[in-house]
Length: 626
Image (cartoon, rainbow, N blue to C red; front, side):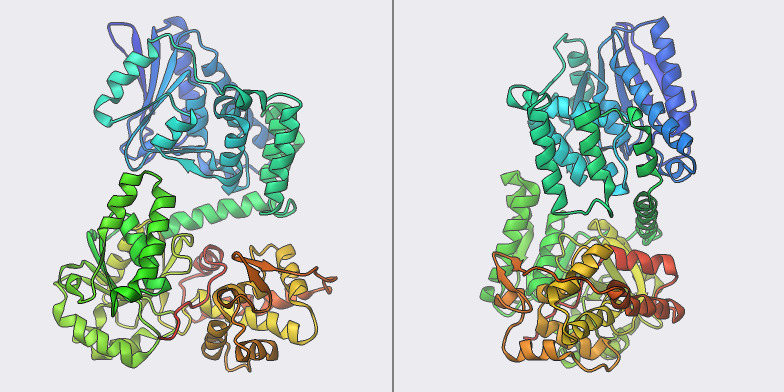
């Protein structure tokens, strides 16, 4: 076989190892599945005492189906054949007479988890890269190879639907706690543990008690209806049909999409699925930036403990780096440290790991961390003179090869680097708020920048699990530059008598994740005003914005803006009837600005421009004045 290796020990235990040829990661292409069927044919002739399935890749277990093949499904028949291929094969695996076990080390996603669920037992290896999930909904599709049937049976439908409808993943410990895996072990004992478990004769893990009963009527209908209500608060069926299809297929067809062939075609060939698959490939392209650099950071120094600086520091500490955070006093750093503690607790869950992350985030009033840092990020307020003074003081103290970066959101790097002896080494690393949620980071390239530094900056962004987008140094760069005219058009509509709720409803119906008026309230109306002066091409600020800023109604942070705010949520009235063509009128200046930036070479091409606007859709500069 080209992709699989089948070995049998003297005791009759068989090992089936997937090491997909000519690929860095395992995926379940047609060839891989065909060879798996052939291996099962051989094992039918000579049944082993047990079968252990594992990966031969250092990168992980199985990343899922082959997305390239999915993108080529241009007829209904091809879509149905793809679903049938995995559904029938994994049902066959689940029905073999001998016990089966999957060793999950690294990523186990989509079809990979569906294969593991078809085994009697599962072991997860406890290390940083191990994660299990069914994220098909993120591609606008559903887990059609048995995941919609088996995951609810194993961990209960509520937890299973939560995973399938959000695309969230579980690490090894949480997978064990949920019942998704039977054991959570270290790498040194994974093979011995697998041998013992697969020959143990224990029953396979299944949901028990109420979790089991919720897979049956009438509780099944109650769970499905509640799931639909929750999905409706996040996604409209006309824009995102996949989560609704997942609920329907689990509730009405026990997860078997083959009995609903029209639904398969509707989902797989929907514009949503095609566009989300395109987004997947755009993300893969962004991941390629920085691969040519060997740069690897261990220490990061962040200057400015405001919302952006503090959250950048916390994120780097979360990703395993030692971080020194500098500001004028410990009191000014206190809010950032409190937010960091909440982030670590929420993301890591394990108190010991959260404590270790917090220990990596070191308050540094005197800036002693500068001399040891591999990356220094300036995140102070937007003032050229203040940044000049800071850069002049920093440059002599930096160690050779360190990256000096600015998180400026609106200033040109050419204006900031004039005080440096090596101006070509200044790079922009522009994060978006909230840092922990937004995947995109703009890497700003000034005229004459050192290409090696730009590559190293992109490598650093990938190291902290973000997506780097190289853009030229121009006011607003890409994302903020295109959002300014869009938000201006929305506020002009309010000036013309259309209610904020109606403006937002027009764009929500269009497909935006948040309306432009709520967005302005979220980032702060004073900041929207300042950004508009720089980025809106000299257009006069809308009267509705000026009036609210003058009254101190700054949006979410003040409790009142276009909307009142309570507990972090906007209090909206009912939207009126949306005028014909309103959404198109509001989005037109955004599209025109994107086209102009591509033509001017601020971003390399239209695909990268799309990636930037899609992956940072609700961002504006969040640098507050001192």
